[in-house]
Structures are given as C-alpha cells and as structure tokens.
Length: 304
Image (cartoon, rainbow, N blue to C red; front, side):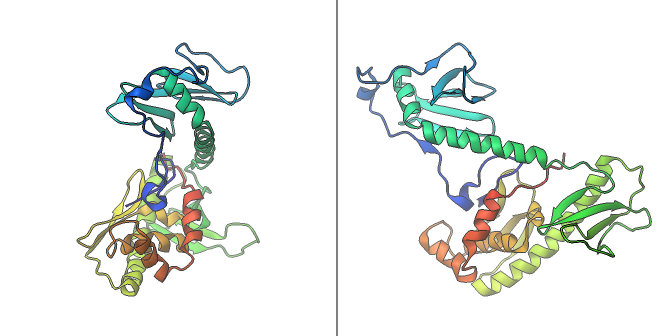
C-alpha cells in the first residue's frame, strides 16, 4: 500500500511512513485564554506580506504570520481531540476541535511554524518540478523509460511502437528512439495515447518478470498482477496474493521498480510496516534505502 509523489499529489504515506503533524492534545481547560499565550499572529481579513514568502491556500479563511512569512490557510472544525496540520499541494489545512479558540490556535501555529514552513516550501518546489515535467507531445519529444531518456520519432512505416537504439550515440545525448507508427500530422493526443499504450505494455512485461523473481526469493505466492493508474499509490498488496503496481513506475530505473515490487511482495508475509516487515524487504534488497529515497525524490512526466 504505497503512495507516490508526482502530479497526482501527496506524499507517499505507506512507502515512507511519514505521519501528518499534529499538535499535542489539549484539554477543555487549556482552551480558556491564558495570560502567557503569545500575541495573535492572525487576522480574518486578507492582507499581503510586507516581506518574506507568501503561501496561500485557495480556500483560505485565515492568515498567520510565521517567521515573517504569510501563510493563508484553510481551517476546519472537526470532532477530534487535538489540532492537526496537513500540508498538501494546495497549502496548509488546519483541523481543530470545536472547543479550541483562536488564541490557542495561534499558539499551536507558532509552535509548529518550522515544520509548516518546511513542508510548504517542499510542496512549492515539487510543483515547480512537475511543471517542468510536462511533456510536449510532438515528434522529437523525450520522456523517461527505465531511468533513461528515449526520443519519440513519428514514423508511419512502423507498426505500433518500436524501441531501438540510434546508430551513433554521443556522451550525454539520449541514444534510444521510440518509433511510433503515426504520421507527422498526428495530434498531441494521438501521440500521447500511442506512447502511453506502449509504456503500459512494457510495464506489464517488466512487472511480471520482476514479481516472478522476487516471489521465488521471498517464497510467497502471487495469484494476480494488475496494472494501476492510481493517483497517489505506487502499489498495493492484498492478503489473497493480489498485487497492483502503478504502470508509471516504468519511468524509473530498474532498482527502483525492484524496491516497489519487493515492498509489495513483503506485505504477503507481513501486512504492516513493522521492523519484521523491513527485515523481509532487506533480505532481498539489502540497500533498499537508496532506491526508496530515489523514489521519494523522483518525479514522473505529466501526460495531460
């Protein structure tokens, strides 16, 4: 049950086990105004920061000044015992019990300001990377396949799509060509659909090979392998032996694919993320942390 970073948003929760930040639980007595609480950092009326960065949630109702930076955030009242902070692609969302007042909320924001600002900057950087990953679907465009760049070449003489190598390869220059059987007048949507279909076929072939290899090494039985197009998950595993793997993994190098495959197959022995689970992963991939980090840091091309 693994999640991914990419244009479909959010951090990879089960692959990386990074919980949402939460403020310590507050008792109803603590909700009463305290003389020692810091001055309010918020206003209900919008205003722009005089200096520093500005982070504005599209559904923001309130603002906070944190270390000189303006954070306009969405606030939700909920039946819960503590204040919760979630930073997603839209910005900061704060969920708080109905009995918490604005003074206590200001204090919690001030306490968590380092974490909040760090996560907001990470999301902004991620959005910039994703924007740069958008593909211009045309003859000669490039896209990642198994960690290498392949160049799309429209060739109406080709049946379907065929991957080959260029006759001459220069250092640092992509040398693999994906010949797609379309005319040069083909639309971007036609090129995208043809390339995506080829990538999905390659993904199934590669996944089946890797799953068979790691299933033997882990001594688990896989009953079914399915491709996934999930927005936030790299893969999932069910106790009945069914495995789902996101076809977009095919953009990454083979060691990263192997990590996700081993991760999901390990769940057939340990349906959790306990130390015993990671011992299972480590038994077949002793250096899995490097691939795990590469998956966390990586981006995939945007196909729209």
